[in-house]
Image (cartoon, rainbow, N blue to C red; front, side, top):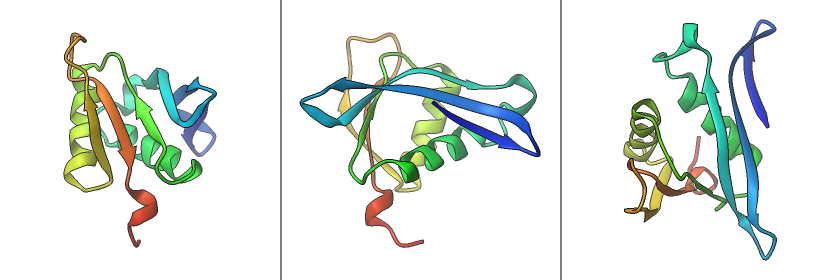
Length: 108
């Protein structure tokens, strides 16, 4: 679990689990929350940027379901070139799928 906070106040958190021990690069998001007072202010983006920075390069993060806010967050990260969608999942209700980090490839 990764918790994003400012001045000892929790703003957002995400919980991930490995999908398959034979593929340590694939992780499943099982819970993500940006607390209501902080929603719509970019903290979801910051949470996943910090998450990707803490994981080895090339890690894939997969979702089975995304809220509209989650969809916007991933599209924004993709537009900025920070992630790449590698596996659209047409069987889900929303625009879910698998995203791979490009953070290790980029210069900051």
